[in-house]
Amino acid sequence: MFSDAGAEKTSGGDVRFHLANLHIYLRRNNLTNLRRKGTPFAVWPGDHHIFYAVCGVCTMEKESLEEQLARLSGRLGVLEARLAGMESAAATPVARPEARPRAARGRPAPQRADAANLPWMLDAAGIEGLVDAMYRRAADSPLEALDFERVDGGCYLGAHCRNVARLAMFIAARHGFSEASIRTIGICGLLHDCAMQDLAERVVASARPLTDAEFQQVREHPVRSAEHIRRHYRFGGVQTSVVPLVVQQHHERADGTGYPHGLSGGQIHEFARVLAIADSYEAMTMPRPFRAGVHPAKAMRTLLLQGYRTPQGGMYDHRVLKTLVWSASLYPVGCTVNLSDGRGARVMSPTSDPKRPVVRVLDDAGKGMLMDLSVHRDVAILN
Image (cartoon, rainbow, N blue to C red):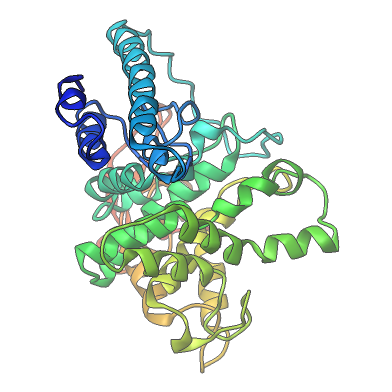
């Protein structure tokens, strides 16, 4: 804990000494996201709104050093009291709520935005931690990457961003990107729609057609999301500049038909080309308040039609799209299909033939034998 010994040692002297000790105190006690000039910072996971940066006392140039020390001492007392209360609360076991079953595919009712469900409520360290967990699970597993989180309460925006991040990281890994690039793409996926939060309740979750003004607001969200990231996030290395650039371009299209700037081909960052395909596939397959989701196989065919619209190209990067098809098959892992022999099946893994994945034939109990359709050529998928 921060003691008064240092205050007696340098009373009326070096305020920076106290601030250095304060930083150590905050980090040792899991108080994170310290910011200057009175900006709120998170003092505990899930608590984002109580205190202001203690370093702000140094911006008061008209106060004497003794007055600044007194103010700093008072704030430290408040912090210590708050920390003691949080430590006591953390020591009390909390009953875990029972997991609710995933919602069936259909049209969910409009929901209010749930702040705890939105990735951009985390600081930079929290975002990187979430990406790290996703990387270990989904970067090399089509089953994990395509097992999308379905909304059964709260705003769908947070689930959408997590789904897109997982799928984009999987595509990037199969496409041959480095681990650092894959993680950066994951960060972009988590934050790509952060500016949509303001529109979530009255526009995103609306079950009616958008007005012209609302549609224009939606088209502006890539730029507004990039601006939000530049203002509030500082990642390591080149990520600080790359992440907002990629987010701003995730609705650009290879043929120049995208927005906000109508970029085409090589003008679009390679990470944004990956994110565009992951975002489009997830959006098509997941239900929204104004429509039902489409079958994953139909979504894949739509991507191919849009990506290969002409011999010269289409909306998506051919190479990235090919990576998705060959890594997940034309019938993506996890979806149910109808076989030519009249049986139903669930796709389990891709093979060297994207039209013929490994499936599990479903019996009355919902389980059955595995069948590699690249070997059993007499059976085909009808979807």
